[in-house]
Length: 334
Image (cartoon, rainbow, N blue to C red):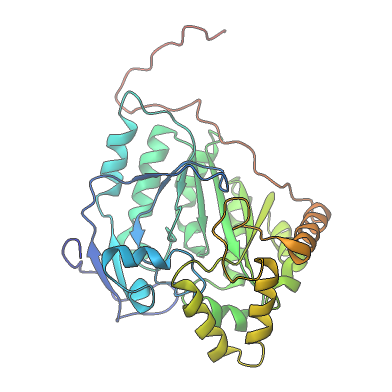
């Protein structure tokens, strides 16, 4: 494990979790880069490793195995916090070669998981980004994001932010079981409305869509998000890479024993007979008749709800490094 265990308030956001241990992550770089054609960004920042939300379907679980830990309970209960992330981010943004394209918080684990309430690392990173007027996209399933509305409004004034709230189900009983320490759907929609009312652009990500479990809710999710002020929407099909497959399958058989095999069969239908497909162009949406029908259902109800398929491009033209003189641009026209 990296670093020392951190002291923190035991009180958490959704559920008190005194079994969770948080260690200092001593990484000296906080920007991750990718070249995946499946996602619309190439740079991200993850303030935390591991996630206390405890979703059995989380595609990020196998990342804990690189640390010599399990993708199961260790992923939920042994967390690593990049407490130096704001400082390291500021150093990156000050480099002469830095180009202010969209940075995403987070590409892997949730930046607003329960420990963020006390550690405030995501908040610190947002303050750095706001001081630099740097474009940032956030994605979370926690209503805690509304806490930072002041910083998000600042970024929004430069067209430099978009907040995406992930919404898996409107069924609160299913949500408590499927996402045990994430915010309720009601709280996420309330946060969405709060942000939208404050002028912060908001999107909804209907994800993951699980065949035979929440796919029938897709129209209602889009309608509820639009009513709460969302301007755009996306969706992804359930992914079960590596160790996630046995974890999710075990969860299904324990929580929904009478429906488990039918749900897994539906997923296989959309994954070419397998439960997982890592190929670019297939892993997010699946293939076959069911996947095409799901995509059509999304498109019809997205348009009906008045949502766009993509959010507006974020603006990096106001980027500045605090304390550094702004150089005139040779080809600017007044």
